[in-house]
Length: 333
Image 1 (cartoon, rainbow, N blue to C red):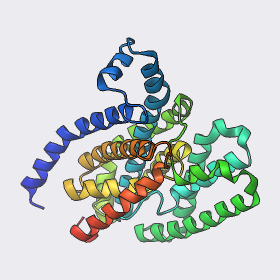
Image 2: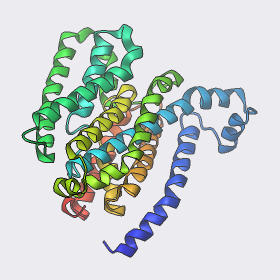
Image 3: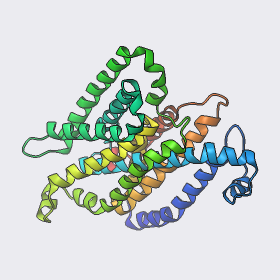
């Protein structure tokens, strides 16, 4: 891509992305089975709104929108970091098994130990963290490589899927409570869910911004990074663990939401290039906006039926990703 064109796109993206985020947030707060105007939303936040609008916005939609923003941001940041570490634009928390590991831990908590539901974010992160360690160890052979990590991740993903199905068969009487979660969704999410998920998500997102320099150095390749004095293996492991924290935080409240960590960073990379100074922040904003937008449509388009947002994201994400592959090609990313 022409350097001047890419620079122009980066400048415009800095201006447009906050506007997009605000617009999507307002859309999520106002649109639904009961519409709430922007004026009414303003009055709610200035403590002068009608009781009905106050209840709809503050008790139902606002916490759900905030959770959607954090979930999308975490998944997109996790995907962006993994794609850089593995030098593979198809890498994603769901593809290599990180999300599945967090999901398995969360399912075990919900089905086997429902009295420990308050530990769900910690257990989801622990599951994602342990899965990352296992994948990293399996890929090690005098050092790790992006290709071995992806291959080990795909195998572990399949194994975790089989274990998850086994738990669902053994505890078939409790499966109904888990099925919506497996599809990925934000139905019924409240301030309670936000309170136990937000510390992990915000911590992970802040750490990801501090990891921008490391992620850019990893793009140079192992040999070049080592010549610059970088501890490549330690940095690769730290970025994978950070991705696990982000994925685990998202999984703990939203379930197995797919395609966000795959499509958003890849789309941003095609538009703005590989520089993580732009790629990561714009992926965070894009992921947050996409999840809230999709969730708003999912809960209101077929009223009174509410679709899991994971289903709608797959419907949106798969064709869009295929379009990107057709138009630009992964090799040109």
